[in-house]
Length: 245
Image (cartoon, one colour):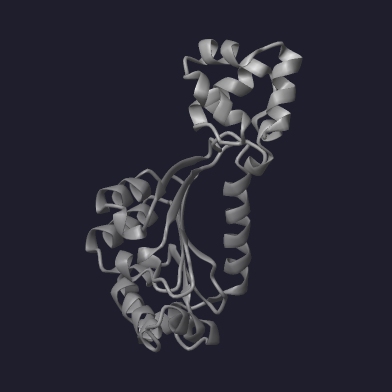
């Protein structure tokens, strides 16, 4: 029995028949709610509004109910679900800052159009920063084990650096190598940020991506940028190394 719901009905002076009529549901449905059955989300919110009680009070197992964060504009089930058109539009929109933080970002390096776009943006005065994993770093080896690809991770990084070499040799492009455990990869274009989650045993290409848009109240966006800057500060400039790969 949902005693909290029964008490809220009594306080609001609603009977089972009243709720059935006001919410346009069968009286048996109301009785099932009182017996502990969880209403569907639409009925749940309508019932809470009618009784003027928070959903989390009527159904404690829900926890606090929060609105969808305005800064989260899209969620992709896996990075492979993001089309090249979306990547092109993301970086094409940049007017001041582009940032890439990943282990290899090989998918980006293999797209000549994206590489050319980054080069053009750098020539236009956009700050372009790229941080990839140190192919000789211990944490790259660890990530290779986590993705169950072993030494292939360091090979992917070397291949990405080779493909990006013309871009990385530009004086207006900043490049660093990091030896950090990455819990996510990040792709920034001014106030937009795509965050590719990392999960044990799952390649980044198969992991979810969250698309954030920054603003005055963008706590998550700012938190990820803080992480980006921290890892960037720990990386080491690697232009000379890139020229030898």
